[in-house]
Length: 199
Image 1 (cartoon, one colour):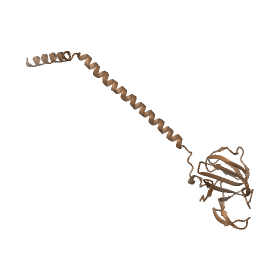
Image 2 (cartoon, one colour):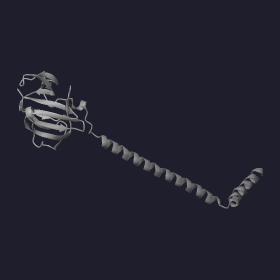
Image 3 (cartoon, one colour):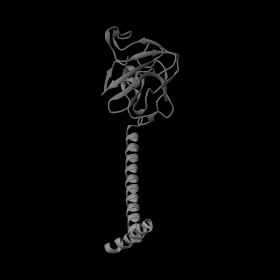
Image 4 (tube, helix red, strand yellow):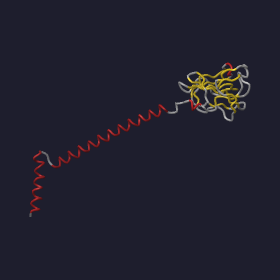
């Protein structure tokens, strides 16, 4: 009997309380469900916006860096295969001028007409005859570094001033034009327009 009376009292209380507050029990449940659902929807929308912004930012960072960075270490490679270094950067006795002068690059001796490769991607800023260098190509890699390739026998087809070249692309062939005593390529790294020691 006591249990039944307690159950009746609880039903009466649960039925009267919403009426006292001016709303029905079902409307209370509906409000709670709707409000929590709106919160979840707002949270999901805000999360999606944050994710998109992060993705776009990451993409821009990747594209901006890309493979555009060319440092000194990248350029410290030989522009030809199967070579012998016959002269390094530094002061030496010049075989033609017969006096001690600064040799501003590295001479890679190899067979006649061996392909010469660009050591890094860039833009051709010079293609032609350059005093004692003979047939020469200069490639600008960025605002800091350029490379010079001299004494070519002839230029590769399609390589001209303004051409964009890829890393390891053939730009010419080994010769001995200009002030040269044998077949080789004079390779020079320039920083801000001045030759530097590449080794």
